[in-house]
Image (cartoon, rainbow, N blue to C red; front, side, top):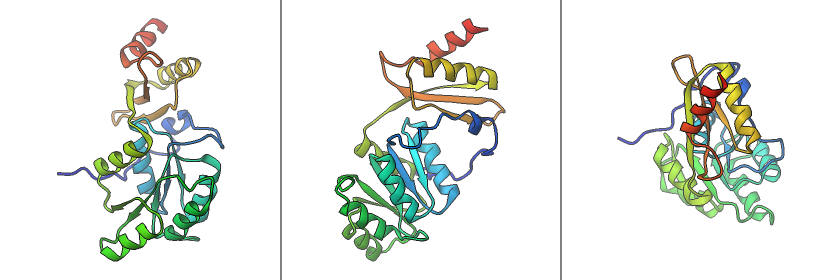
Length: 212
């Protein structure tokens, strides 16, 4: 059975959110997620960041355009039915912008009919992903457009251990970094896998053991 994108998320005011290392306000991102459903955005972001991709979120069409211009994503996941400016209009405007015209745009829609798919393709969307979203299909599209990335992770950490590990990784120039709850009260730190350039989980575990 295909795995759908989960929409449950941890408390945004908790330690994981407080420790998360975000990109700067104008730093490029791998994926722009534009959807007016905050739970769906959070589920997509969790899925993609666990795979090592840096993401930005937009809750309406106007915000999506502004973020695309500022953050220069490698690809866009764009809901068709958004407030303030619909997804089809956003896709056309992105295609018309000489700075962003080559950015792959993929639409997210709850409409399964051929008409919605044809409209999306005419507006410049490369793929049409039907809700409920299939996690494997989303990852396959992003990997083709951005590139495959592995991810390392170390879980079961206390807040102090997570902070120490984040500081160590940042000093080594590793990023983007992500922190989330592991479901057992601990924290999980994730970072992109880059042999020879970033440490593996075993090295990170050894670092924390030495730091005690």
